[in-house]
Image 1 (cartoon, rainbow, N blue to C red):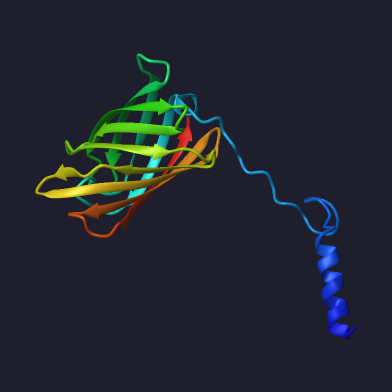
Image 2 (image 1 turned 90 degrees about the vertical axis):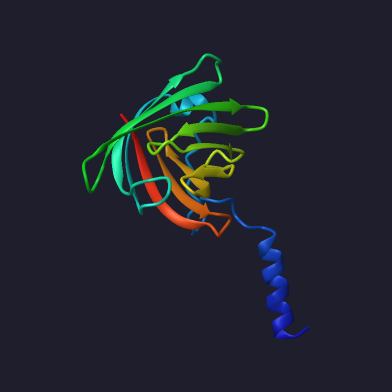
Length: 183
């Protein structure tokens, strides 16, 4: 047996007998935050800052508060957002609803944005770490838009949103990022 063959056979044998994560010389992977999926996670008042560019659906950077209150059914929420635009300090309001389907692990959101655009879409929350949302095409002025969001569930008190937009069927482009903190 050659030296290389001996080293290779020892490496293969050692790979089958690795120590559990967190023991031995190396550190294990730290546990990821895993919040219970459902409308209960969002219920309450959240302050936010959103940094991004102007588009057919937003006037740009803004801050404010979003309040999620239980809707008529136990698996729905009413959504109310109030805030100000960063550059002009102009006030804005948005509203919507969210419906949770526990069997499918999906969150269907219907929202009316400050400029009057209505977005409807579904978010896949199969992973407890993130919700991947995409809207149906919606008219915004003379254009058609689709919004794609990734809601990263950071902790029981915080989540972030990365938002992309597609205009008139074009490629998705980064629109902005939001950070939400429970009040």
